[in-house]
Amino acid sequence: MAQEEVEMITMRDDLVRQALKEFESPLIGYAITFLHDVYRAKDIVQDIFIRLYQQDIEKVSGGY
Image (cartoon, rainbow, N blue to C red; front, side, top):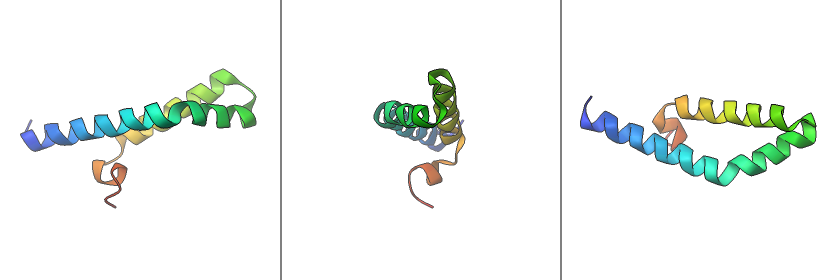
């Protein structure tokens, strides 16, 4: 694996970790208001972050 690829993976990990820290709880709370089910809300938010992690690093960092 090239150094550039490792740096991109590290950057993606950091971005997703930061997003989790900042937005996970508010998103779960928001989802609960619609779903009225804590476990489903957590599952949905977890799926969102998995998809975020799988996104291309340029999209995640705002470099459309």
